[in-house]
Image (cartoon, rainbow, N blue to C red; front, side, top):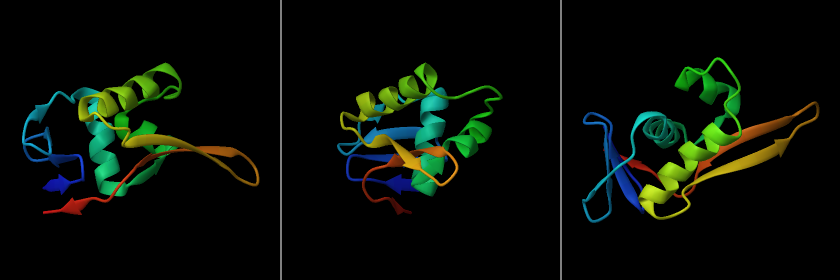
Length: 104
């Protein structure tokens, strides 16, 4: 499947991400998986993201920020952001994708 965004497109069959000019971007590993999940869901809670990435321990701080920075740096725009949602009982961390996604 191909996910098109205003700044990139991701081919999940080939596991490759391209910029809007068609140049391949170096987004691999957990950073690629993070971007794929966000293309599919647009927003994901931290607990679900940890499960999808296979993390048993806490996926906050350095590792999460490094994956987000890898995606944003490769694309050249801040497309992946972290939101803190304060709930009635606890604060939830949401990772989301800015902009619209069109699937093909």
